[in-house]
Length: 216
Length: 216
DNA sequence: GACCATCTCCCCCGTGCGGGGGAGCCGTTG
DNA sequence: CAACGGCTCCCCCGCACGGGGGAGATGGTC
Image (cartoon, rainbow over all chains, first blue to last red; front, side, top):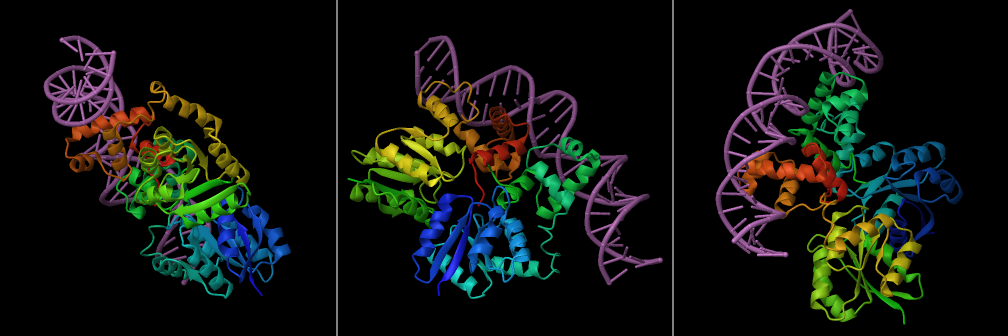
């Protein structure tokens, strides 16, 4: 009995690529595709795939929310393999916390991709780069925020960083969030400290590099 | 006689996707693949493809340089179809100036992709979004820098922007480029003006959003 | 109740940043 | 030749930014 896979990605090209790579294996079968997380629930119910290859970033519903939904609303849910473009995608960790079983970078070689699907299907939790395995382990255990509070921005700090990454000044951010500029300065300072950034420019760079915000 | 295509992209997944999409057409045949622009010349000589689907961003040699090389060193060269991830990729325009015959966004639907390959093979110059057609037309005629000098950064300005986008201060940039800080300030001011940015943060954002620099 | 994180706001203070000028040197183009 | 664009450097100036430190108000956790 082959491993059945459902592909969820907003880019048809990526779906075609995954399909081509996976269908080349005799023991793997792609049973369906979806272009957005919002479409995933009925498909999972109907197709009952062993593995869902899920993109993180999608227009309507992202991979995190979709993962959560699948695991909550479907009984004996499929394994979730999160697919991402960037190595250090903040969202990936969120997806793992949401219950995803592993993740895969799009740059991976075909052999690594099929391997990942097989391992996931067997119940292995796989996390591709070794460094990330450690990171995600820490994330899993709900201690260990001490030395990676770099990522542990508070809600407010995230909001401020998002606006910083859109080019707003402190005054403009204050206006937008309906708080005083001194408050914004506090949050900005906290963000800079946690990100190890010297100024807002470096913070915005970190935001882009980590995938916290992304171009386009 | 089918249209023969050579795929050049550093991501195997994208190559597999393109191959799957194109091979599904009876009149299109993928005759080869390359993972970097540096490998393209011998392959073109040997395979003599009608069309080269060329990624812009690749580790060793980018699509622009590769396009230039192919068109210069090969006689009766293939058509070059530039493939890109981002809509407003500065590099795309450079590639078009380098002699590429058209460009395609990776998000495009499969039908659009095969269409693009067919049209390019027939000698059509195709530029996907209408807005870009106009832009590239202006780029083609070597006037028209007046109203889009936004993009017309000088070498030095590009260098400064690149360093800005790595988080360097004016003093650090000056050190790196071995010039005075006042010089750097001049360049920074020019960059800000041309990009319509208010401060360096907005300039860096523009750099990311335009694909001038990219995460990872 | 004590503790802690978060959010809010305040003070002072130094400086890096960016605007607005100008100027000399060089190479290309008309 | 003169003109122009690009690179280099200089001046003055105002201000937003970021560091350091403090503080009151929530709300949740132990």
